[in-house]
Amino acid sequence: MKKTNFFKLTFWKTLGIIIMVFGLYSSYIRFFKGLGASTRLSDAIPWGLWIGFDFLGVGLAAAGFTIAVTVHVFNVHKYEPIVRPAILTAFIGYMLVVLLLVIDLGRPQNFWHPLIMWNIHSVMFEITWCVICYSTILSLEFAPVILEKFHLKAPIKILRKISVPVVILGVLFSTLHQSSFGSLYLIVPGRLYPLWYSNLLPVNFFISCISAGLSMIIFESYLNARTFNVGLKVDILSGLGKIVLYALSIGFIVRMTDMIAAGKLPYLLIPRTETYMFYTELIIGTFIPVFLLSQKKYRTNRFWLYITSIFVLSGFVFNRMNVAITGLADSSKTSYFPTFDEICITAMLVVIGMWGFSTVVKYFNVFEDEDSSDASAEEAVEDKEIIFEK
Image: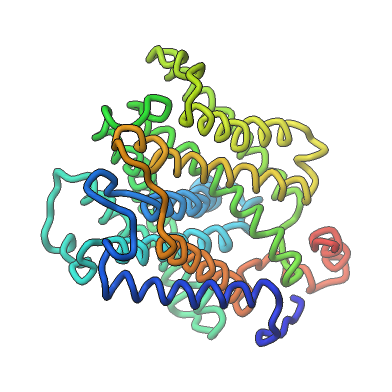
């Protein structure tokens, strides 16, 4: 792994520090002066940017359960080098979601109430418990990486013995959670714009999070190859690209079939903001990446896989923000644009997530396949193919 000077200030580190300073100041405003002073939320618009970010954090974490079940349950060991970065991504994503949920609560000091005050008829109750349970499972799945660093073999053996039931439980909770975010919007059929409202919202959320989660792994692998000279083999990334292609195609077919069955195609011809945003979401997040991934020369090229992952992730951001904000704007009869404090706190969490991931990658054996390839001359030759060449 390439050594980097932690204290050396670069453009991106300086920008990150500036964002952190503003984010901490905005956090002070939120906790000491309330939601009214720090957000543009109201009774008409109770959910804004932060709920959209929660959708993103959970969705991007989907690679964790997807890869874990592929390797540990279906024994497809080709993708084993991806397990650790996928689980780390999921773990950080869920931690950021938990942190932002506490910030977004009207009374954050009562965040623990759902643990003892059960409301089994609430979708939010299911979401809360799925977050708690899946975060615990992700901790168990990632614990061996930490324990290896300190040579604690006994607890590692115990964790490996229970790995399969832990993975199965993780798939159960994560599937419930990913789809229940879509279920959350089934309670507003008269408010969410028809281009996004559907009885299949839970299915759409689940399928889209798979493509976004795997694209996040491709995205991270490329950036870590540039920063630390650790990454993943291009054939593994290409395999992920093929799965993303299938997920995007299936997701598009499901959405269009549902729109045709519900008689919503005329909404595609109405010249209004929602229509333009819907087309933008489809073009960026589906049409362009499907075209690129369907071409073998792009799907087997590390740089183009990285570009494709940016398109998929951007389309995913558009989709979740359209559902959380754009699709509800017209029915609320008022406009919404996040305040400076909302944006600063959100940006601060993004910086925390990126710093957290890069720090763990630097000090722990996350991309284990890369390190192990230095062990022999034969593997060293292979290493040249693995490591991204600047």
